[in-house]
Length: 197
Image 1 (cartoon, rainbow, N blue to C red):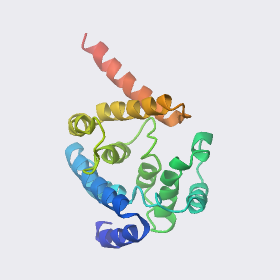
Image 2 (tube, helix red, strand yellow):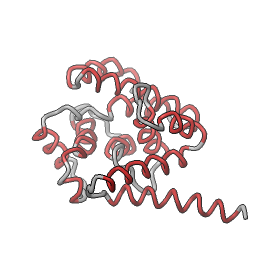
Image 3 (cartoon, rainbow, N blue to C red):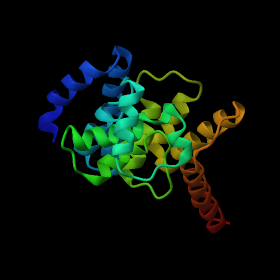
Image 4 (cartoon, rainbow, N blue to C red):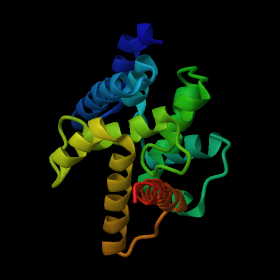
């Protein structure tokens, strides 16, 4: 699939705003780096990172069409929140327009914004690569970059906690998938702490 990289880059460049295009290239690089560290498929990680935001700048009617065409049952909070549409829409786009049939890659793009419980390693990598890409400058990004290479589960705990706190602070509806991902990570670290006492 890496042999299609140039084709995918050209498609992205034509579909995304310049800053989103740069972000996509950076996420691809971060995803490949994390895949190398954790022993995941570097090619899949790179391509998912590259394509994760392919629908981000598409008109909302197009995003909605692809999102619904994906065929998965989506929670009401996703259906009602246009900010979240690009992820399931992108998952459908890579499947239907680019011919990528790998279920794990499709899922990694679908959940790159919300996360979920029981994520595969590839899904974790794409979720975190989006947080730590080179152009990110938010408060705490350096801590996230360090966590990402030290302990991907700890990075997911911090990432989901950050998302949840932002949503709570702004009185926004919270996706259950994000809560489930956060709870799962809390349980992992709580269990580890209990085993060490």
